[in-house]
Amino acid sequence: MAKSLDSATVFSPWQEQLEAAPQILVGFSGGLDSSVLLALLVDTIPAQRLCAVHVNHGLSSNASDWQTHAEAFCLSLGVRLHSETVAVQEAGQGLEAAAREARYQVFETLLQQDGLLLLGHHADDQVETVLYHLLRGSGSKGLSGIPASRAIACGQLIRPLLSWQKAQLQSYAEQRKLSWIEDETNLESTFDRNYLRNNVVPEIAARWPDYAQRIAHSAQLSKDSEDLALAVAVEDLQGLDARVERGGWSLCLNAFAALTVVRQKNTLRQWSGLHQLPLPGHKIIDEILCTVIQAQEDAAPKIMWQGLRWGRFRNRLYLVAASDQLPAMNQALLWQPELPLVLPDGSSLIGEITLGKGLRLEAGQSVTVRTRQGGERCMPAGRQHSNSLKKLLQESNLAPWWRDRIPLLYRGEQLVAVGDLWVCEGYQAAPDQPGISISWHLNSLVDSQ
Image 1 (tube, rainbow, N blue to C red):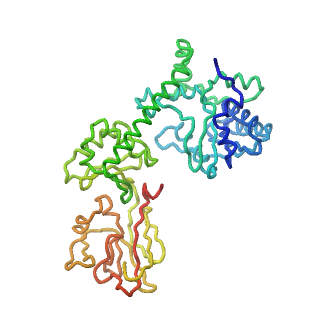
Image 2 (image 1 turned 90 degrees about the horizontal axis):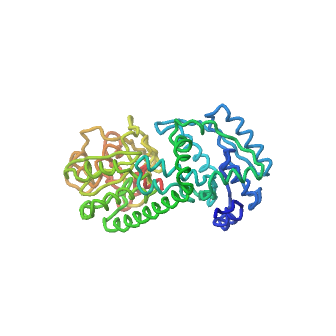
Image 3 (image 1 turned 180 degrees about the horizontal axis):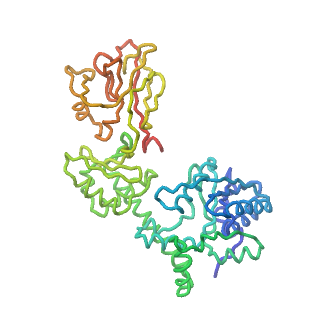
């Protein structure tokens, strides 16, 4: 028997969170699903506690009319409305994805600590999503479909209508005499999801009337499989000597080689996700295994994808921020070591005043910051002879992908320190002298979390 679509049934799993939330945002397009969601909400939550968020993408000639409708609808319910116009910039990911990204940026900006964002996705959206991912060749995560809730920015996203089909929403809206807008692009089957909605799902529904429940069940089984895969990866990583590194993380390749191929692939897939980063697909994983992990020890292979880099160094596999597209330091910069200095690539130099260690501090004296040009020589403090910077960096534990980016500190034309690796002989602070302990902070995966 179909569940009744009423506020008590819809929000009973979320009632405690709704009552405790300091902020409740509702994504409001003015379409059927968001209109039903908002109307149901005002039956269970005081309207003054709600804020509807309408994002005007400007992609339709009717966009201004939709915003006017949203304003009138929210006014009729006594709900505050935040409207925001965004510029959708397609960058190769498709117009729908770009619009979604712009919309979620608005939501994330508005969300307060522990706030809730409610969206009106329903069971038919779940069907389209699972079918779409199935036809893309997705694994268990993609086939898990749309989650009923997940973390977003500093709050939580909830989809209370995910168990109800569109027909139930429409019946409720008609009974309540709600008005809603219809996006004319929903009829354009050139978009993959629209094609599924308009051409494929009706055929499935005619053959299997309970299709939504069947697909929702499969999505739950896929989610269970994904949860199990994640738990296995967490357990495997504990035996791989996983470490936090400069700009990312690393794991031991000797221990990794002892895993079965299936568990190796699972570890690679889940590793980035454990750090709230995109999960690589099977093509990227196969490339990491073949190009990076199976490479000769003296090779320096790399795989770069969505701002991430997988590289090999000293028998460890590294996951770090991709850096090849970052701007280079084309000219020397002056740095007063008492103040932070942001470098062109987004990294920064930070100096901490100390006594008896670090770079000798002379009042009011600045240093010049450069990057490698080739041919530099220096003598790290405590050594007896100078050597080429290239050889010294090779001897250090600095991974190759950072060596052209590490800041070099000069006084005049004399190299006095190499990032936070070492101070050169003759420029270290004596036990009774003030000094600067230098830290090189990368605009990295670790720093951003």
